[in-house]
Image 1: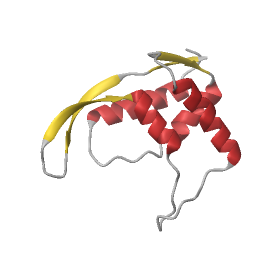
Image 2: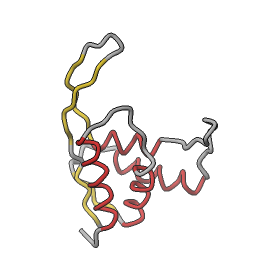
Image 3: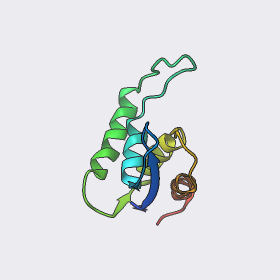
Length: 113
C-alpha cells in the first residue's frame, strides 16, 4: 500500500479579458481530470477507453470521492493514476504542475509507503 497525499497549491489564472485572480488547485482535482481524460489521435479524434481500463479508473475515482487528505492505494491504483497523469496536458507553464507530476511519478516508482 502507498499513501497518496492530496496536496494543494495556489496559482494565478487569467480570464479572456486579462483579469487575473488567485485560485487553489488540488491534486485531487488534477488527478480526477487525468482519470477522466479520453486520449485523442493526431487528428483530434477520440481513441476511447476500453471497459477494463474504465473499470480501473472508476475504482480510483471512487476512492478520490471523499474528504480525506491522504489515501491508501495499492500499486495497481497508483499505476492507473500515473499512466493517466503522464499523458495529461496543460495550457500554462508552472513549477507547481511539474512538482505534481514528479510527486505522482515518485509515488508510482516507490516501494511500499
